[in-house]
Length: 525
Image (cartoon, rainbow, N blue to C red; front, side):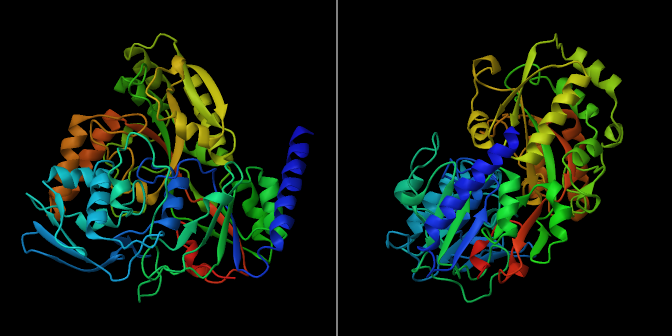
């Protein structure tokens, strides 16, 4: 009864919003998009949370962008050159680029933005470790100078997720990264309407009339990003009954992440189109600053206890959207898939897990697990994680809250009993899992700022060697050694691979161009 009353209340609230905005938007093309989480942090260089990343792509632009085939393409850059030895790069901006306050985008802005990005992102840090220095030579041209070749320059500048290299004014880019930026000033395809932002409810964007698009057609995150839509409303509707009913009734146009339970019913609706947003892996993330998971054996224990099929089935994904077992940390089906080191973990081994937990010195202390209440798949994964931990004798303290609160709490380094945490679950798309340099939790060198703060010197050394190796056979050998070490260090425990679904009204135009990261500028009504 409580759930029904809550659903009714949400429906009534949404109906009020719908009728209140219907007249205002009658003369404009408005997309109503049900976002996968509530937006609280506006700075895509501060957190890797997908909701903030997606916000970043709406209002900011990047120097390079990945197309639908995974190839880095120039975006804000007009032309670039590199020396034969790969140590000297020069980049020239396209003419006419402006920030949303009408000020021109300059090379100095880009240099400051890249320096900010380089202090946060794994590829940016590796580039800096290779001696990378950025410098502006005039208003439109800037350079990168390296002390040793670095084969991931363009891949890093076009990195689609984690910490995308978004461009912002120099004055903002030079702000310390100890706290997220609150001011939003990009040059992207949409303007953020702060005056209409209602946290916990709605985020509004309007088309940027001054956006200068490329001549190439849109592809993935690359090409012409001139928006077709006049207005985009991100709606936060955590009640799945309300959001799917709104989609069926035409009150919303697109649901970013459809709860798995609704896949089969909506597949039968002739007005709805379902698609998948690429491959994802689930992560059980450990806080390595505090016991028991400051000990690698405790982390190994959890990985030995994980039953991947139990997780992906329990999350509700149908057979064609899940894998019952994946043997790699780098996405099954990707070029970097390898089974190196996986054999001992192919089947759950509870006895082995209990043995390792005892060897880690665990004495029954409380372990705080953060359980999100508003994202059904993560809620299911967190509850299965709780069961998994209990099955090997861990004393679990499950603490529930919405996902936005968890994304803020996971940044705290305090002890669990002082408001910190021990474990949380998340998911990562293929862009954040498919290589030693892009996998969110395998790409972070010691001293990183990623929640959980994983640190393993051997992984750092192998990662660096892999990034600089150009001989394919040696590169594959290093990849295998890296994964073998990952099974020993266990910076996180992956719990399975699946493909989340989105659901959209078939009346939307250009859905065939909709990508793994919401590129809403391609859509039209």
